[in-house]
Image 1 (spheres, one colour):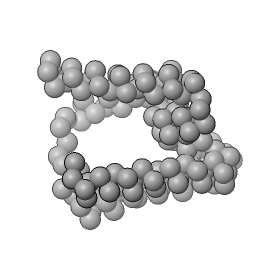
Image 2 (tube, rainbow, N blue to C red):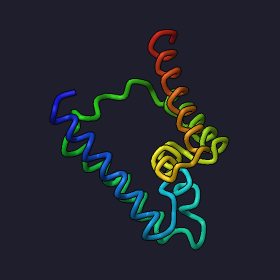
Image 3 (spheres, helix red, strand yellow):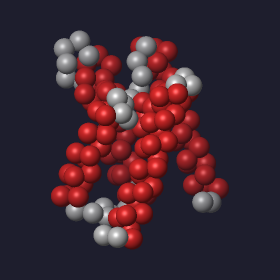
Image 4 (tube, rainbow, N blue to C red):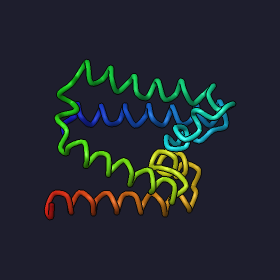
Length: 136
């Protein structure tokens, strides 16, 4: 990676950390996206969650509009994305959280459960990339 890409990654990581800190300090909530999505439409849970999700999606839309080349073309079709989404949903249920909840918020709180979950997420992701690129 070049210096510009490194700085973009650093700035993005800092903003993710800042958002997680604001969610925890300001509202007492863990900024785990799967939990936020899962509770976004439950009465009483909308005040923070819906604006958070709108910001998350809106930022992606704006970034894709400003710098579409940063995203590239999809590497798989809709059926594969649907299967991947289903597997991610099952995984977040089994792990009681997602990469943002465990990997960002849990690790920052020194949660051993989050360490185990994050290692499992990363190992599974690496194995999946290997299988998709070399065996399919």
